[in-house]
Structure formats: C-alpha cells, structure tokens
Length: 127
Image (cartoon, rainbow, N blue to C red; front, top):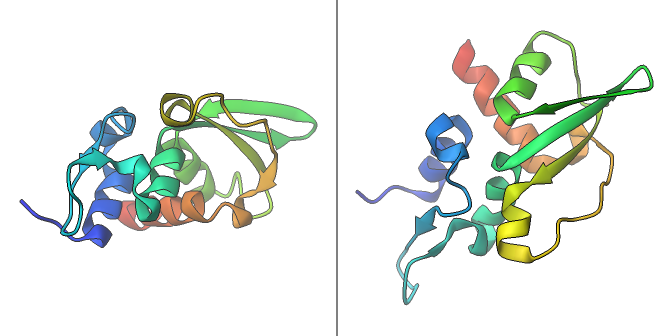
C-alpha cells in the first residue's frame, strides 16, 4: 500500500531484501505521470546509491572491504569505525542509471550524509 517517503527511506535502510534491488526499485507518488526508478527521484537518489554500494575504509594504511551498509553499522556500533573513518563506496546503481561509476573519492563517514543516516537507523534497530 502507500507509504510515506520517510517510511520508504526506513525500509531502504533496514531491508536486506531491498538492498539487492536498488537498481530496479520502482516508486510512484502523486504528481508523477508514471512509475520511476527510486534512484531517479531526487529525494531518494542518495539513499538508493548508498544502499547499493560496497564500502571500503582505511585503517592503519590498509584498505578494508568490501562491506555493505549493515556491516558498517555493526563496525560503528562496536567502535571499530567512527565519523572520522575515511571511506569510499562503489555503487552498482551508479553504473545502472548513470553510466560510468564515479571516481574513487575517500571521505570521512561524517560527510556522507545518507550513509551516516543509514548507519544510525541500523544501529538504533539493533538496540
């Protein structure tokens, strides 16, 4: 049935089943003429890209990964990574809807808003 955008974002964060379907997840809302890929809806795009990514982080001069978002949430909850941890992601979705994948860009977790929000949602779920 119909769900709010906030509820859909929550499902995107928490549903392991949806993580594997980000390239094909279709949505529709009032004002849209037809169903569209979630990643093509501006308010859902960043979350869809984050949830379809494999993540890597730097620790002690080594690159660790790949990890899915749920793995990072566990590592965050256990104190293995934090907001200053440098990460980069490789999204299956970017290739599916945007052509070439983006260049590897290391950024601290604190600056990757959609990933930070997903990790917070997942760690609150586990409490």
